[in-house]
Image (cartoon, rainbow, N blue to C red; front, side, top):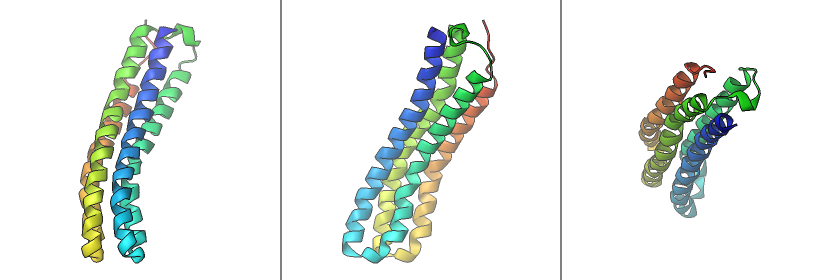
Length: 158
């Protein structure tokens, strides 16, 4: 049963930490966007995109959670039969998306908050602000890719 508990812990960390990064990042960007919208409500649409950008890390965490669940259910064994070593492998595979989701979500939010200041002064430059945010996003995508590649290498072992 401990093996299964480690699998669940890995899935929970992947979704939970990546989701926390998104919550922090969208919160930071949203605070900055609110300040700009209070001065110029017409900029709402451009700012909403900047606020939403850090939300993707939470999606990556959920993708990892579903992939972990799918991988384990594909083994066709009872939960008690998952060895501790396999549970540790799954837990380890979840770490890349969990950590990159948490850290990049927060920092992408900070970059997007700065982009909100850019939009306040030069609304036509919103695309440049988004590009800066997407650079941070790259590492969340790489974390998800790492998790996917690691999960594919795990088999039910003793």
